[in-house]
Length: 228
Image (cartoon, rainbow, N blue to C red; front, side, top):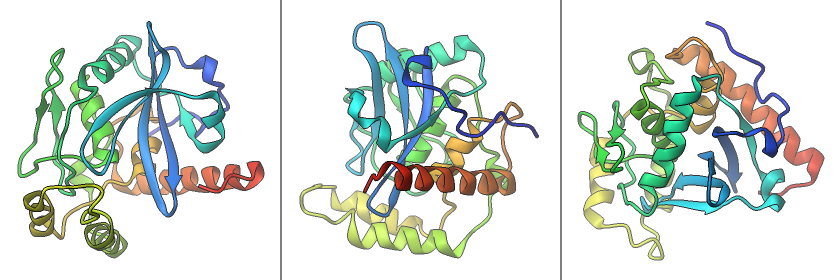
């Protein structure tokens, strides 16, 4: 199991097709995809708590808020992921804790849910996008339950999903409640796994590399004076 340097020092201009990125909003880490559009330049493709997938132009002033890395993946697959980002723009996939291998139809962009799942988180959105291109980042069979993941799921279920301003349908919130407890694939583990040349990455390796990602990101925030 080998990887390139985690968070190798690349500039925004080095991104030719795709990079996998991470940031933090308050106490929640968030994974997303940077991709190059021929018409719009560098964009961010991400899914939010409402399940809305959105692509927006990357603002130069945002570079201090993100850590990113270019996956060591075949260029044609990166091009496919970049094209897929445009295909899924403005679509909605429900927010869902439980995940099993899922994909998007290409080139149409329709969500194709895996077994016993109905949606995605920010982290599993990245997994599904890469899976569509035939790249499995994480070894799901190696995953184990973690008490801190249950605490995170309970927190999101109690304090984020019911927010009136999000207007998430009650049946989707209840479906997430019924899905617990379930495995969690963390944003930092997905970002870390994207850097390995040998995939899919087993949980112990992804977990340890994910901690390095978080440490690097937090140190960057400290040095740059960023308050997420």
